[in-house]
Image 1 (cartoon, helix red, strand yellow):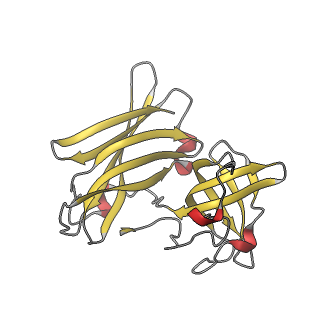
Image 2 (cartoon, one colour):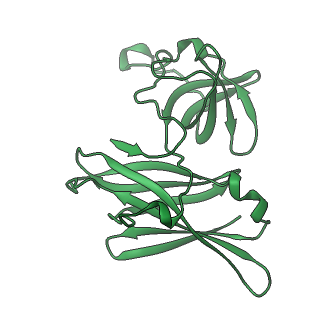
Image 3 (cartoon, one colour):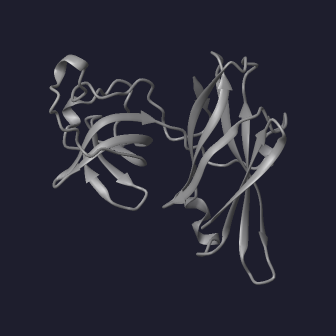
Length: 220
């Protein structure tokens, strides 16, 4: 449902073809594996298979069951920002489910000649890790395409030298009906801002809500 402009590529419907159990596939004494669910960068190889994932903590893990994952729509030698459910093994990671998510590079206000769209969302969670500011948004939607972008507004400094990077979320609901609450997963890439940031600086993100703009802050 969510169409994002300027991001790492999104692959719709990319999913694991094996390893998921139906009710008839297991017994009462089946022990479920220890599955992690987190945002990560997933890399495709020259044959379009997903070869490895890199966590926001910087750990790179080989995907052990790459041959069981559909490559429909995957581009060779590409990085995909993803929400991944996986189990860590000694030799790497076994993927159980993967969903490509949005990671649009922020634009300047001048890149929005028609203004900043501010259709409302709600923040479920926001955290900074590695080279991303990650978030889970709650969005009222039915069946229209929604567009999300990030706006890079300014950089300010306090008297003690602490810098704050100010961003806004652009959300165009496309005239959609506010029918059902759905989750939108987004990551704001911080790589291009690393030369400007030091530990202890602040990331500020303003989001449009039903009660106006709300500001969220996280330490870098």
